[in-house]
Length: 397
Ligand SMILES: Nc1ncnc2c1ncn2[C@@H]1O[C@H](COP(=O)(O)OP(=O)(O)O)[C@@H](O)[C@H]1O
Ligand SMILES: O=C(OP(=O)(O)O)[C@H](O)COP(=O)(O)O
View (tube, rainbow, N blue to C red):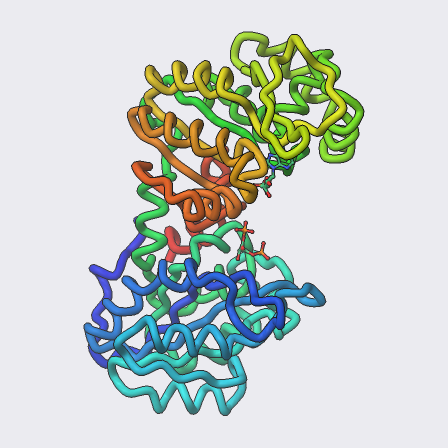
């Protein structure tokens, strides 16, 4: 049984709160290009500060050696704007200076500790008992009274700050975590027929997801779009043209054979686009599958596909969307994503998971979904029925 903020006695308590505010950075690298993940945690943090907690924030940003690997100074500044509570930042995570700052926290205020991934142990996977013995967890447990995990988007990681504290401290799920577990949990018990829409460009991953959800019975139908749709067309023997075919081959890597075998095993449960959209001159042209191949790359699905898939959503109990249907970043090729995603809200319950997918929804101003996840990989793990280490840790706390 996972405890939530309802079970936490917050007044005067030093609470370590793990959030996921991992964000795209501005080109100069010193500011945030998008603050959606910070906004998502405002509810949890405001509730804790209003209830008199002394909040120490733990978070990561990027991965070592990656472009987005940076300090959390800009995040702290942005949080100071978003929260009515005072927000401070310290350029250390668990050394004596950081611990002194936690001890000195006033009730109702927030201290942002430095990027957890600046420390080597946080970049490794541990089982919870070993994570509890890491320097970060041991040192911070000496100054925290309780731990709140609100970092759903990192819940698929077995890193110390995600799974270690539950062994040391009374631990609770934050409001983001709670909402995500409600929206994405027990997917196999959601109303059927369950329709998974797999679009986007992570083709090798999506083919594996298709296999998992078809084999397990989580999906009654898989609708394909984006480069994933082009790949299944290619695997079914359709030649899209040399441009699209080479994108498909490079993105599918060694999974093209698996796509072919899925089409053989589940011919009636996998649907492919009826048409695609290309750019000719300056125009969007829709081409029926029977008219392929074409010279130009397939950048979106066309209206015939949107209409055909919309019929499937009309009778769907649950629609699960991952991956945009086209290059939504360009207005002309956002038609498929807009049309398909809007149509999906006709399903009894509609769920959106995936980093770019959530970005597409924000950018296109789409609404009406029952659940939009803050997570990419973590959401997909839940939507394919995989247990999440963070959730198991909270469950056994
Ligand atoms: N037909 C297409 N050709 C090229 N890129 C596409 C096509 N359809 C979708 N994409 C691209 O897929 C990307 C998002 O895919 P992906 O990363 O798999 O999504 P998510 O992060 O939601 O899992 C977008 O940048 C979009 O432009
Ligand atoms: O952005 C994240 O995940 P996502 O790319 O799956 O949405 C999380 O912050 C986890 O980051 P990680 O994939 O570097 O562990």
